[in-house]
Image 1: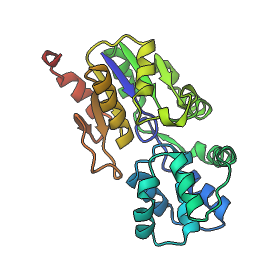
Image 2 (image 1 turned 30 degrees about the vertical axis):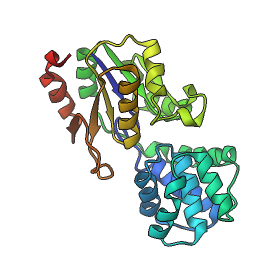
Image 3 (image 1 turned 180 degrees about the vertical axis):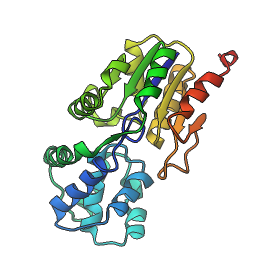
Image 4 (image 1 turned 90 degrees about the vertical axis):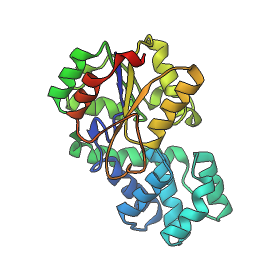
Length: 256
C-alpha cells in the first residue's frame, strides 16, 4: 500500500501562515487593505494552488478597483496560469511586480507567520499509517525550505519515505494540477496497489485524475473536507484525520 499526502490544508493547518502571507503580500505591493476572505475567495474560486500566484491574483484584484464579483467575471479566462495573469494585468493597465521579487516578499512574510502553523494529522494517526503502509509519501507545492522548517518543527520526516516539493518542479506549468509531480514520485517508487492520495483542492484531484488517465493507473483520491472544498468530491471523503484509518481498513482489495 502506498499513501501520499498533500501538506497545506491536510498535514498542516496554514490558515494562520500562508493565508495571512497572501494578504500581507497584496497589501505590500498595492498599499490597499483587502479582506483576507475576499483574497481567499479568488484563490479557491479559481483553483489557484500556488500561493505566490494567488498573491498575484490578489494584487490585480486590489488594483483593478472593481467589486469582487465583477473582477472574478473578468479575470476568469486568465486565472489558470501565471503567464495569463500577467497578460490580463498588462491589458488592464495594471503594473505588477517582478515575480521573483513577489516570491521574496511573500516568503519573508511567511517566515514571520510560520510559527503559528499547527498539525492537522496527529502523530498517533501518522504512526498507524506508517505501520500500515509500505510507502508513505508527500507531493506538495511548498518550496523545500518551507517544508523543511515545518517538518523539523513537527518531527514529521520520520514518517515519510519520499517527498516531492516545488523545488523538484522545473517550470510553473508542471505544478499541480499537472500529472507531472505524481509521475515524478513514481519514478522513485514502484507503483504498488492500492495507492491513495490525500488532498484538499481541485488541483490535487485533477493531478490524480490526469495521472490515472495518462498512465492507465488507479490512484484513489481521498478528499480531506474543509470549508473551502464543499464542491469537490473524492473517491473517499474524510472530515477528520482519524477517519483515514477507517477508509484504509475497509478498503476492498478485490477492486485491484
